[in-house]
Amino acid sequence: MNALAQTPTPEVPLLAVRDLHKSYGARIGCTDVSFDLWPGEVMGIVGESGSGKSTLLSCLAGHLTADAGQVIYDGRTTGPRDVLTLSEPERRMLNRTEWAYVHQNPRDGLRMGVSAGGNVGERLMAVGARHYGAIRSTASDWLGRVEIDANRIDDRPSAFSGGMQQRLQIARNLVTGPRLIFMDEPTGGLDVSVQARLLDLLRGLVREMGLSAIIVTHDLAVVRLLADRLMVMKSGRVIEQGLTDQVLDDPQHAYTQLLVSSVLQV
Amino acid sequence: MTAIAQTPTETDAYNFAYLDEQTKRMIRRAILKGVAIPGYQVPFASREMPMPYGWGTGGVQVTAACLVPEDRLKVIDQGADDTTNAVSIRRFFQRTAGVAVTENTPEATVIQTRHRIPETPLTEGQILVYQVPIPEPLRFLEPRETETRRMHALEDYGLMHVKLYEDIARHGQIATSYDYPVKVEGRYVMDPSPIPKFDNPKMSDNAAIQLFGAGREQRIYALPPYTKVVSLDFEDHPFVASKADHPCGLCGSTDSYLDEVIMDDQGGRMFVCSDTNYCSTRREAGHIGAMAAPAPAQPQERRAE
Image 1 (spheres, rainbow over the protein chains, first blue to last red):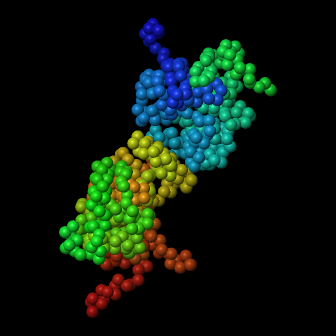
Image 2: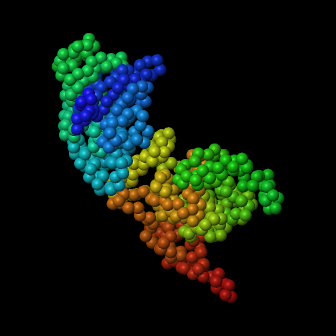
Image 3: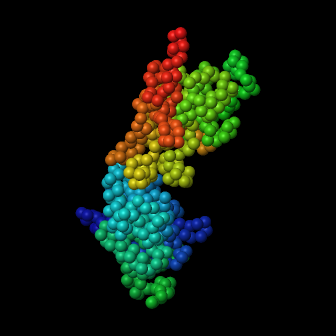
């Protein structure tokens, strides 16, 4: 380790999680979670409902306060520091510049009363963009990148289909060029053909922008397609982690074996 | 207390200026805090006033807490001294405080206003009290009060520009024509109460103290004299203090804010100053608008006789 640290370009993980613990009263939300996420890596978290996936993601993203542990994020300008101890303004700044969070339900992540262009532009304006023309052209560029027709820019998200809303949410999050994106069931509630397009789009964007991502899902097909590495959770604990193909093709833990064998084959 | 003994009013049973002294103390503390932090909304325990919410209960409480017996009060409603709201509030303070009243802007020491700033520039020592219906500029963008307060605390004002963005996207320009959000001394985003945006530049660097009272929402905020107030805008869509592009029909003024008055069913209309005192002062000084009746000339003729 020391030898590594002394090399001229010491590579540190983008996100290093150590012994993260969160409990709801006597019940465990998630416990003993430790992992490293490297730049450009996509990590999947799978498990059944109530296994602590979403709790873990919320703790990482700062939506919930973790009870113990460290989440060390390697900021662009600040270098590695524990985000759990950041002040509220610093965390908000991080949330709208270097991080992104895609909610399962686009209604949670979008402003439904604001046009698509306004939704995409909000993060830009929050970090100080004050030129209407520039904001609008960036917004329309991003709508194009998530395959929303540019003439829908002044429509409200409520006039969009579920798949379009989810794509709009992704555009809104990626517009400030984040490095780390948290996704909570990004394909939940979408039909399979829309899911496939969304996954294709996400895979393209993640590769193209060199994003790191943490994807929480119960859909093994999603992680197979997107994730480099996989973490399996049960009852708030990580029971198995490794390369996606390795975990899915050769599951070691009994629960993982159950999970993999439960997938319906068409 | 002695003031009442010296100038008996219709209803001597009231404390001077209606409110009890403890309430005034509480409101004055809120005002002082507001003046110390320009643009910050100070919560206060708003009292029931003998008028419905929306009629200026906040402004009345602030005025009551500021009044001293020597004051000369002016009350305007949309610029006019003679509309229902202005008349009833003026009469209220005549009865409960026995203070002198005036319609003349430069003579007044306290001016309570609904939705306008007088055209005549205010001077040092004057107090301008605004009636505010909704003090929170972020209210219609973010419904949660806890969240808006946090946004103010963290200076998280990106959302305010989203509103202006939506205006331009929908109307091609910033269509917000009143209640136009401003930033105070580079810190707090403030709701200027529903004054036309034409009046926004007058708030900045004003010699008078400007106090804002919202009775139902229980907030007081303030601008001390000579505070810098900037209207929010985009670089390529700058703020414009717009008004109807006409001269006043009565006094011919081209630089005052105008009301449009429908004259008949054939599309006849005229534009008149919304500030009635400004308009009549100009007419007395001999400025006659295109649609003015020769009425102002008659008294002069009579005087000549």
